[in-house]
Amino acid sequence: MSPSKLSEFANRVTSIMAVIMREFGKKSMRGSLLHKVTIPQLVVLENLNFHGETKMKDLAGFAAVTTAAMTGLIDRLVRDGYAQRIYDSGDRRIIKVKITSKGQKLLKNINEEKRRILIKIFDKFSQKDRDDYLRILLQIKDILTSSKDEIKDNK
Figure (spheres, rainbow, N blue to C red):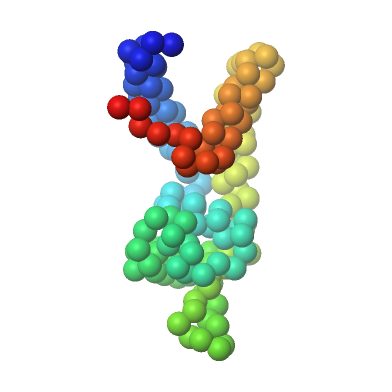
């Protein structure tokens, strides 16, 4: 693909992905909005659900925010009962966070809603198209997670 065509492709994908993410977010967040949970809070809850107890500084690093910003986000999750802080008995400076059963239930409900939306969308596609889409998504994931050095700006 020529550089101009590749650039045009990138522009189109960027604008399409923005619409897809916005619309998917609107549809899948309906239930979570009732709980007043933001997308960043959901991302942190997903991380806690996957990794278990996590240090505040590690959560901040994962989210690429300051520990102060993460503290505010965690304050709201703790206040609403979706997460809890755990203090190290040997060193009170070390604070870990873990998801609560209420937080796990919320994630389960939201993920089930996402699954229902995806089924409705992909029911309109052939099995071959679904297989191709999944194959390409897996390739993108592999490229993004394999090495940071592989994706460079070619200016």
